[in-house]
Length: 250
Image (cartoon, rainbow, N blue to C red):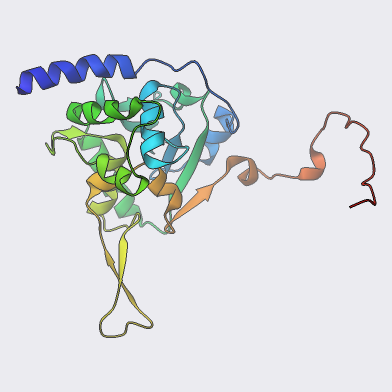
């Protein structure tokens, strides 16, 4: 049965990796600007243009369908990601140069924790993608899958649970979990002082999706255009069309 599941997972992975043919570029950052802005430990969120991207965006009700960790190694090995067909591997920024992206930066990491974070990701190179999760995701490519919004996040945690397998956002969440850095933990009132304090409860890393790094109050959203010294007065606009003054009539 496992062999049948693996074979079906590989076939679905091949299908889901196909581009959709419908993609709108609205926030594509020039590669040189993006590279200058990134730091080791940053999470790069990507809006993918493949069929699996549509399933993930539906389930998470989000723009972002993929996540990779910036490690800043040389020779084009900028990122580490869990790829659907190739497993955990190095990737280059150029691979995503045509896609909308966002940088989410952990705040105040000590150099030693950055080393532990990136070291865990490097040690994960070669792990395979959780193909059982691919089968689960494929069910939700129907135009209107009957899945209530409140249940969708849990559906991303239906994988095999095998530690030698990985999914893009869960692998990165596990890396941050290992250094004690919060992504989007649940909070509970402190029974000793419920009015003033909260206790954080770390959710299992299998429940994390790419959008959680964007929503997290512990990650800064970094926009390379602004970091490079944005000045709205220096923009060049097309000559605007004549605009009629508003009418006084209600």
